[in-house]
Length: 403
Image (cartoon, rainbow, N blue to C red; front, side, top):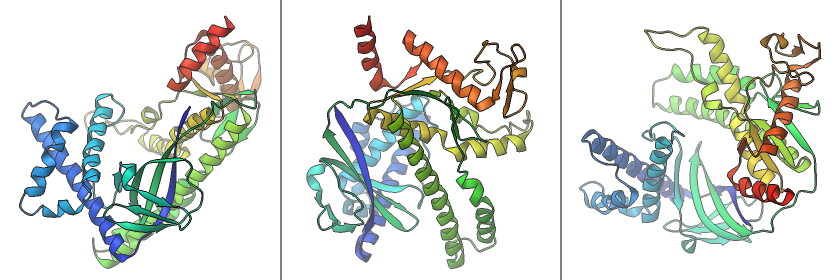
């Protein structure tokens, strides 16, 4: 099977290379925003959507425009890929996976890509990589890049530049060395509760840094915008955000790696995190209720990183020969695992579960995990549920052999 894997490193460019990195990222951002403005103007004139091929034809025209000759200094394939990113953003919007594409701001998500591996040279022995129009750049080599290089993405964040090298290699179809199955209930008080009774405590990386972040944000707000002191205060705020994100990412990687190595089949709830974390403010005509409480809940949900947890668990289980199976989350914490009586009265508090029919008592999150696992087994036997696409064919083959 084909295995795609990305390796991310910190770049160590010299002064001239740093200036070029900023210029190239700015050029790609400019092309993206100009193409988005063209799409919006075309839509306002009742025109059809402009696909990538038609949009790419505008690139030579823009380069010949007065005052835009600096676009020629940027690698052409990087500019073309900025247009591909815009087309992908529109397709995600049409498929209702994301919001409408927005204009990019300077300093937020600065990046560009080299899609042609023939133009890239990787010298791992000397910790350097060759990129078109940038030359050889050194990087902090923390691990070996395996197999065939496919493309390279350069990104900037908090005055630092990083490189992500995507690779592709052929590996044997993985076979899991474990045979256990487990259900997982995600929550706020407990990050993850397992059907065997164990649980993972939440990290709450944002909550632990919230007071410090608010202090530096107040200091930043009291300074003249775009002044040198304002820029210094902004850098401190960005550093705290980076610390929060890195801590959360490290926590999720460790948790998902442990789960994927110890279990062959994992059942989780098919949570719609985006809907769960929507604002309750409402409108001026129809204001929401309990807005402050809902705002705190939204922060807690986003702080847990449930979506990233599922994404990492998905591909890590596939790499280890396991399977991720998502089940409908309805009433998993209100159904008794003994008599299967469903009632909101069963869950008396956030943590306590007592069945009003058979008096079964347990921790509410543990009950949810048990029900997730049981529901997953039932749906898996019926071939229903929310299964990763790469596993559907494998499941069909297994069911055919067993029959």
